Image 1 (tube, rainbow, N blue to C red):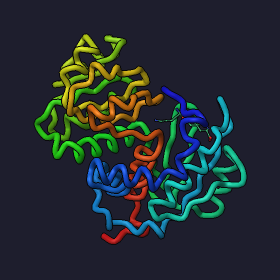
Image 2 (cartoon, rainbow, N blue to C red):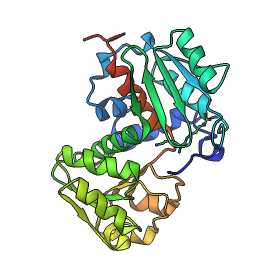
Image 3 (tube, rainbow, N blue to C red):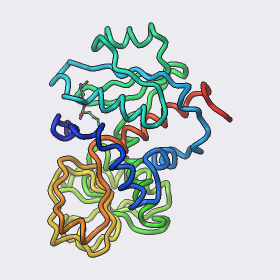
Length: 273
Ligand code: 2YJ
């Protein structure tokens, strides 16, 4: 799984308004609208102000990423919640969050990034929610992807989840990966998924793409007018690619916002239903 770097996320907090404006332009929706649509939730179903969120820095493995917890806190606050970064880290930070009666606890190590709902004792996870969030953004930017074929590039965790959710949403799904075995395995698990062996050819023919791969996509292979919803990092599309296609990307926000709203939605606390 690709690990975020401090450089990937250094501007996330200061660029939230910029991303909001960009998403409105491309999808007609704000960050929160996309997150709510992604998890099948009516935007006003919960009162975000009722959620006290603790974000716990995790030092294990490769350690803290510069501005990671602060960015996650700022995303929560952008959604209208009351979030802070705990003073202590790791297990001690988790204990601190529980002691101060946080409604939601967010933490990430090198493999998992979760939003734990303390009332419901359930968590949402970032890989699933990144897939859901980027599908919702693609659906909105495309008008609708119901009955349309969507190419999933990359058969890792996010790509696999994307295939599952796209099929459930009524799209036709094709998957490609430089590691063909991975693509075949996804198609075996999620019946109805078509494997395309030649990655470049797959991209050349695709109108709708979920790019869940860290690999570079050549601008020359992108179809004019394609819609590319792209959680993959590093993000290497050039200016010409942006002129050719609708490209939706941010390194953290869409996936995290979806995960946060999903976790909130588990709870009846602050719910207006
Ligand atoms: O607390 C911190 O600053 C760090 N322990 C954050 C680590 C962030 N983790 C990652 O970037 C991993 N790749 C897991 C993210 C899951 C995305 N689906």
